[in-house]
Image (cartoon, rainbow, N blue to C red; front, side, top):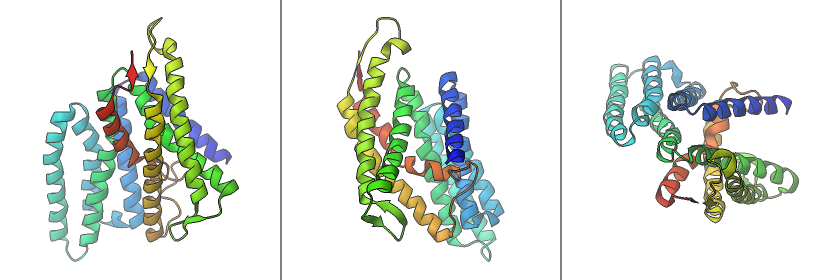
Length: 284
């Protein structure tokens, strides 16, 4: 538990430092590094890292995606389509020239994770670009609501859990824990909105106040909790198929990057699209 808390503390300090410095380049580097590390962990777990050419192409592409789409979202998406097409063609060429060793399953998995993970995490960059005045709050909301849901599910399941959700995938998860996670996320979403509203005087010009749509934030936290659980279950399935306990050990007490960030892979795009559609949640 001590190692877990220390790792979490180090991660929080790094995250706060990046947000405090408020430099787009640092956000891009952080998202690219997280994406590449997560894909690398999957390639290690599946042993597809042995396909060195395919792994190298995948990791270079994954690291580049946040930079391709980050500076100019509209133009970046246009460029990303061409780069993604070239990446997929490149993997299939590698398979054709090494068809005795490289199987279609390897190419399919490399393609899937190399597209899904960086584009999902790149929504962090889109949030940074789209909500300049409130981007810190939006980013903190998306990440902390998910992790609070995880913690709420863990503690509720530990003390009250009786009915297993899916013993074959994740034997410790219970329906009681799931309900506790949803309730924790909704409550935290509400409190986070209220806290942001009350702290306006600290972050903005003197005398400036605004109203936050706390009901929207509380309700949005419910599907965030569900999507977080779905991401966690998806990662658990992959770990079981690969017969590994954790994807890595870069974060002592937590495992690898993917072990810590699996629950946000579906949440981040959902929150970004929701905020883009219904923003402003803040009324001056």
